Structures are given as C-alpha cells and as structure tokens.
Image (cartoon, rainbow, N blue to C red):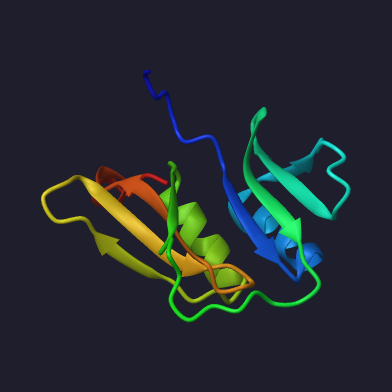
Length: 129
C-alpha cells in the first residue's frame, strides 16, 4: 500500500451554520456537494476537493483533552491572511518552525478547534503576500 495524501478532516459541531460561514470567510473554502447521509452536515471545498467535512450534532461534544490537537493547511499569501484574521477579530499567533522555513499562523475556529496555516518563511522576509 502507498498513501498519497490526507483526504479531509471531519469535525462534529452544534454550530453548523456559523462553522460553514467561518471556513468560507476565513479560509476561503466553499460549501459544495455532499452525499445525503441522512444527517446534517456540510463539505467545504478547496478547489475541487472537499477537505473539511462538518457533521451537525444536537449538542456540543463533550471533551476534556482532544485526541487530535490540530490540523494544518499549506498556503501562500501570508500578509493577506493575517489581515483577514485581524479584520475578523480572530486571535492568532505567528510562530516559526525551528529548523524549517515555515511560519505557522495558529488560530481557532468557532468551536475552538486549533488550526494552523503554514507559509514559507520567505514570505515574511520578502514582504510577499
């Protein structure tokens, strides 16, 4: 067997509408086609690939410590993304990855799930974005 890539992340939420709006507005994903599973949900697409699957639940999921700490997406356009977070009033932290040319922009979605978007550190050095 040969693995090719991570296909998607699946998140349960009692705030389906606000979560869809967040992922569309902040990450630029778009809600699209989803099979009729018989329960509420949404698939959020990056280009033609649904990378975030949301499952609507009645009550907030109980959690003490998450088993999955975060998920990450690689991107370009560091300055634009930081501006988008700031305009939306979303707290974030930019951290370099020691020994790698990566800057992580860490933030949380509506439900508090940790996400980071990774940029080449050269974007910060060159003023690109």
